[in-house]
Length: 237
Image (cartoon, rainbow, N blue to C red):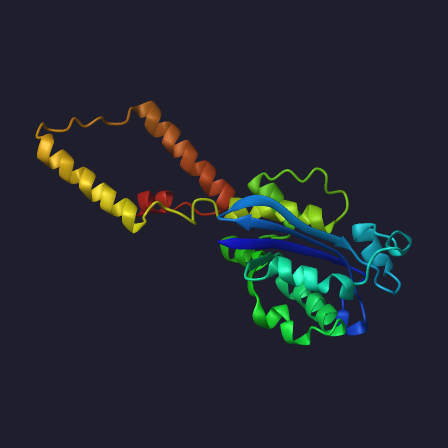
């Protein structure tokens, strides 16, 4: 499974009013492992940067004067993200800007909102933590992801942080070890036990201390995630 974790920084909030992308950061993951491949470009927007946006990312127009325009890197970007699932936090925002830039660059038929496979990690977080704050800083705190270096937003830095947050949010859900091959091996193991081990199994019960540690662990899970199925099961008995 190939995924691209992507983020952008912009001159403002509304592409409909002519705002442009000034930074793109993207990281490649294959089977939930970073490959080391990345796409990172600063872009000359050809227009002023709103004061509010400048306070968020700190990228000045003077810094961007010698950078390429989006049309110059569009093909390279499309090749990098081709056939991958895009992981974006608040995907409609970034996709709106990317589609706008692609239209200006003559790539209107390749709008990402219509053609790419996209996972909005903000929607994923809202499903997991309804009614709670789910911006990137809040998720870093919830999942104990280090974002100490994030004094200002940056597309590549935010993509790196989002990668850690996504892996924490989905930890253990991708592969439960239940492949057909694994099940077949397990079935064969049970057959070997039945054929060669006829002695009764000895049952070891948990000690009081172990049970207390188990309850403490469940309580920690409940506090961190807001929901622990084992605790709900115990209460229903």
